[in-house]
Image (tube, rainbow, N blue to C red; front, side, top):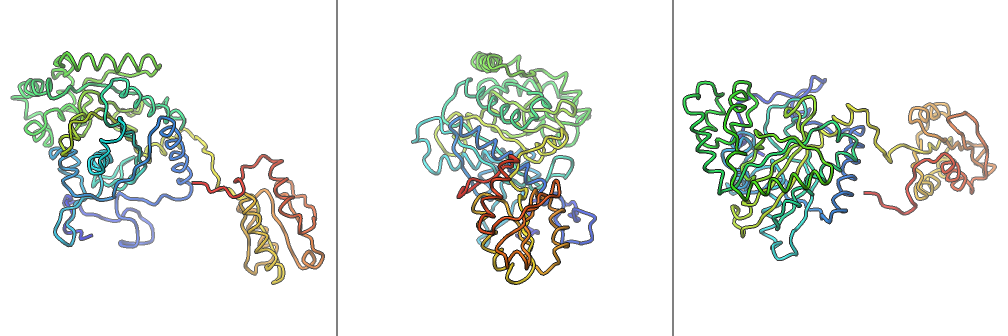
Length: 457
């Protein structure tokens, strides 16, 4: 990618860390490696999302990492912060404008239209787990490459579906052990019938108050007044709090719809806070919008959100089709789980370390290691030429429950030593019984193993 063609600000892109390497041999600012200790969180989150989405009939979709830029400018809205400031946009070799995916919904909608999903039984329920890209100012919980999971329910308009999407999101957070850390913020932002009148009222309210607005809000006042309510600047927030409330200008249909959503949530026991200033950062929303806010840090650390977008598919060239959805940031979820010291199940811990000495022992260890792995035992072999003591120290570092030791004597006698690392005791067993004996001991300790032949995703 030619960095000169990126649609970014003039901010200098210095390196991301203070490590020993200098650019370009370290990560760019705003992106990071997902190291093994964090991958166990990502893996657990993905498993929970897959489970809950499959339960609800959602099927997985993956859209391209980059799309034609118009997919996002049309779908997200040219006046949104994402499009106007944050997209990674470049030209391909034929001069066509392409953009790295900044959010998931626009690409899913494009796929729905392009692949004729309107002919499928409606609603079409899809979920995704993907990386996204925004040229944003890196800070706590905000990165330039970040992972999101999300799900979309396309093809039907019913307040019960909005409530179901919220309920699935809440259940996922509950499964991850962090639901109680967040408040559900809820609002209705009307539709094409009632919103134009409110926007005129809002412009009238801000007339003469432009000097109190930040630079971004002065632009929003002209292009997208609803976003004035979403600004995080202190002076703008004060004005937003005393501005006319959209709830007072909703049409009869939107009021009834909003009432139904709330009644469904109450029926399911999901608490919410009515937030009249919540509008979200994307232009395609109508009626229901919602976010999960950190109880201590508020909107500054929202974990995710969503809402209804009944006009987006028509806006992107399809037939008029109602839809709603949700998306959440995985890095922020991982941070919340770490903050709560939540331990996640994992299948990465080793069960057995195989130590050997001599060429003949090494030859016998190779098929043994393979047989142990096929039996569901996570096994590592020290196949170098280190002394047994050196290999045993390595086994201690990996914190394995058992070490198998095969030396010159064991090879000659057709035996192998099984050492219990937790108590320091060991037994000698016939070599041909090694796999059976190890599997039995691991079972006695209730250690998690793979089912033989199982492929784990």
